[in-house]
View 1 (cartoon, rainbow, N blue to C red):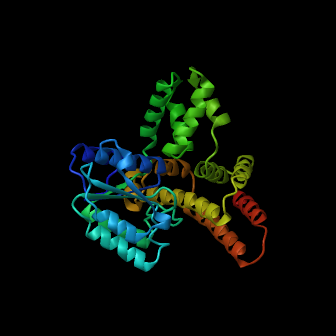
View 2 (spheres, rainbow, N blue to C red):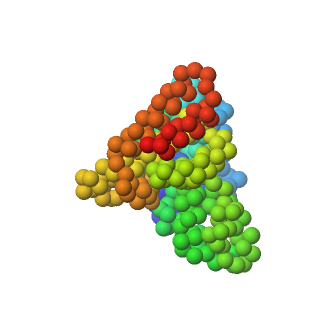
View 3 (cartoon, helix red, strand yellow):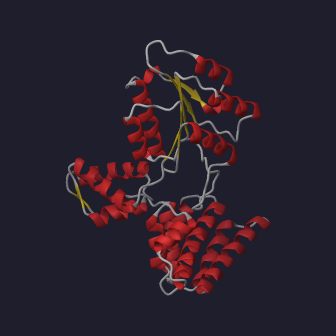
Length: 347
């Protein structure tokens, strides 16, 4: 069974031919929650009280095994929801018990696993990120016997359309370029956009949501600010670069993660440079490197204008050397980071 997105899940649930096993996860946590609720609503007929919920962080597998064998008395299915079970952090006997229960699930039982409370990717942020090994083992099994739903952010264009619809529903207006800017700033994350749109609609009070409102009211996101920093460094715009540095440091992100994110942005642009030299297109790069977000590749192609692979390699070497200094002893990470950006601006 292929991995479904939220649209594919909706089509599956319409058929009323439910699977005994479901697993919902993904980078877009808000949509992952929606998927779980849609499954529960469809299976229980809108009676969520008939669901038996287990906390995956304190799972008693003996009780779970007993519950999985019960026959429903007042509903069609015995619905079990296991929330935030991290197979990496439980004992091996618990992992074996969970796998056994999943392998021998009774016909009348439906078990739903979902993850929204921990990073199932184990901190990986690359374009080929996968769930950690022990979690992936369970996901792969459910993928063969049941339904796996992975929720990744929509494209910028799709998200912008959704944002304009939300504005209209709240009695406001929003132009497409403004919606695109908001989508990019929120990295198309549903939860973040819901929060920002609630704030913007309240502020607009039935009027137009403008670009200025977004600049003044929307909370900067890590990836968006890293993108601004990278662009400023490559264009040798020192003031813009240091402003982005201040914003990034104010977010209090752990320095290794911040450095890796900046390096990832540089690598995106380096791939675009090499792709252009080889006569490759945006679609080629997306396919070859398994990118999910088209706008990330399009931005990389746009920012690669006038760039060389040699210049980008020098910047990446500076980032590598800075990270090595951070790990080699007691240093002021902020000072090392700021000096590295200044050195990159001089290249």
